[in-house]
Length: 288
Image (tube, rainbow, N blue to C red; front, side):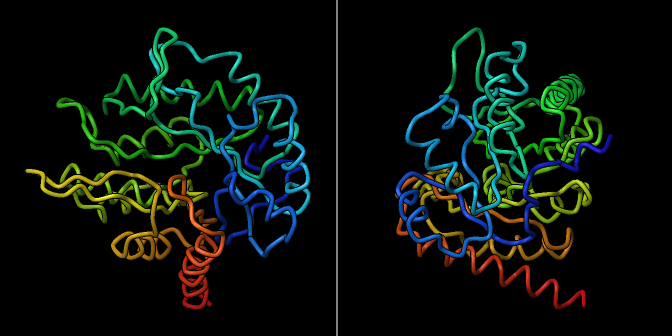
């Protein structure tokens, strides 16, 4: 069975959407602005009922939806959290999202949860574990998931792969899709001193099914450059340039504008999405 075909889900348009955040929920319900698609964090909907589900049922009737997980701790040394996975399955069954994604990282150990997405060693052992865990999640959900490359501020000294080789190998072995976060690639290229263009060119093109764009914070007056993936401002010019290259390489891909701190008026997010749409349109025109 082809698990990339999801029966009952509204297909994800190859267009630019925005992350659905609490300050905008009521306005989107009331005004139904022209947004191509919306993405929300899965864990925010793990409660069985309440006002948020009432709002989501209304919104989901009008907009294609993607569910983006932040708490599964996909590649932890611990076993997968069965209760978390069961809640995710119930949520997927309820809303039939076009896409379901998680982060290629870990974040919990021995019942202790970090408030961050923690990096993996780029080793053969980690590739094997990641592929196995992704397989378990895909089997449980009965569909492919996407995994996202994360931003990092430290890395392990030893490894068998570069970061981009590691991501590509996990995707290849697991058969999952890739959520390519272009901002995270740029952030890591500055923090760790590598060529972001080389990273993009190493990714499996057919596996890239979603792209994330966001703003970062630059920490000044330090001995070394440091960017923080803060999701708190407009997309940087350097990330827009890298995004244009990504679309040239991968073709038009559903693209999301993320904004999680200092959330502005909805018009700001829609303007960022419109700019991404211009890049997608330019690639379509070039291919025509």
